[in-house]
Length: 627
Image (cartoon, rainbow, N blue to C red; front, side, top):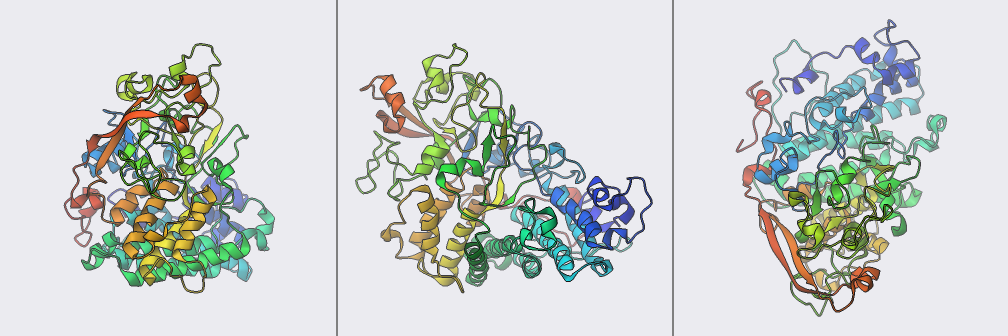
């Protein structure tokens, strides 16, 4: 805060704010024009121009400069020796690197007035800037006199939402904060103590509630929104506000946050009940208005990326809140996209592969989990000699397995073991190119086409975006909050008919997976195991796992500290050309898992440290324990 949080304590000159491009666009004035102090707020058009910059402060997670990393649980294994990644620092327990790692989206700094991706992977810096700006807007609402009641509500609702949202985004990683809900003068001594997590969450909840009261379900259905109809999809609305209200309250009720606030390392059922009711209201509105929908599984890939579609933004009707889209047309191609394939078919990139232990969460199509990947299970039908047979359909979408075609031989120089994934022990993908080899035995195909190499153009013309929140996530948040808050998998939130287990089944049904087995519906603990597994599968590699493991107090516990690989031999009872026709039925021998790495993390690793310069600003601002 010496360099960033302290900025929210200094006056933000209105004239300086108005000189930014996002505002002059609305003011229709030259950048160097003299602007009266109240011009930014006098009517809706001007005030919305002021507010627009808050959208530009939304961080960019997926492509900081040339690469980035955002999965810090047990889900991914990056190439050995690549120290520029914050994921590497997390594995080593060096959380100080959140601001120094070459590839990290948490950093200080940032520039809210540009559309340069390198300015956007800056959660810490942009959040405090946005909080200050939201407070300035709220402090000047009385100056919005030339506006209808609807216009006033839209401005206020956005400001309240963003103030709550940026605090919430910081809280997830650093814990309780000073909640800045006023424009702080620069001529007074700072005395803003850190609140407990739950006290901070209560203040964010109040802002989300106000936003939900003021905002419409759909801007296209308002008089104001008609002026920009068709371009309002990601403007802040009532459902977003209610969904984040519920998520914020569920986080406050989770074991880590409850322990930080009360000393009790268990769920807080009161917070979970409130979370369930807020999420129930969000889902009820969603279903009654069709504002958001679970996309058909046939279009599942377009939730995350589009290929060769003239720059079309992914997300479809399921994405609720999406990352910053700065430089969306070229930030993924030839950069991050290269990281997902071995050098033998894609000769650049920092290589990253799904861990075998994480892939194990993808159970069977009949809905049952894999109990032990090295043992045959008659109940589920899993067989380690046919480990990829009859699996959850999301497994086949997200994970590329041995024998699958993943490169086209358009240049006429690709051997068979390069065109088809040679992921068996001692296969080409597993042995070539040293540390960049496919260490884990699996490749990620959730975020890019299975067919991709240096010769065919599949790595070009991609547009990728992560959703901070999408509808499937909201159903799973509701299932967790309702089960814990109201006491059973069959419970429902207030005013909503869908049960907790019904919400999980709704997400599974979309993917073609059978319902949760009755044997998991007898106790909260049994069912929560399936809820957690469902979150792992449905939200795989989308940046949720690290937060989930932390809030559940599992980050430091085995087996969640392990990163594993599979080892196996092809059975060779069919020729390769037969295997390549249907690799899902591939027959293997000696299937086993081996540990690649085990994290040595302690209790301090549940929270990021604040910069020393920040905690030395004043006595009431305390460092996180252990740092």
